[in-house]
Image 1: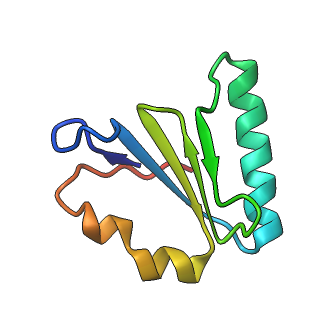
Image 2: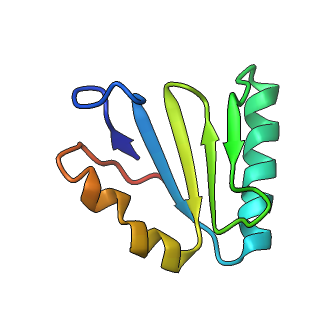
Length: 90
């Protein structure tokens, strides 16, 4: 999780996750959207679901990125937002 509150108007947090296959990316997405929906959080927008190499879930203040390993390395959001506080979540 990247804390963007002090440096970006885009979102307060980015949550980054890695999936092992496109099907796994879609399963993570489906489960996350369902569970957050049950808690009253509605996804504003979803990008990349069909290809499932990089799925973006926009919850306005929180943006979830679900990557395949090689895509996560290629885009390197952790490097791009290197000045942000980071926290690992299991």
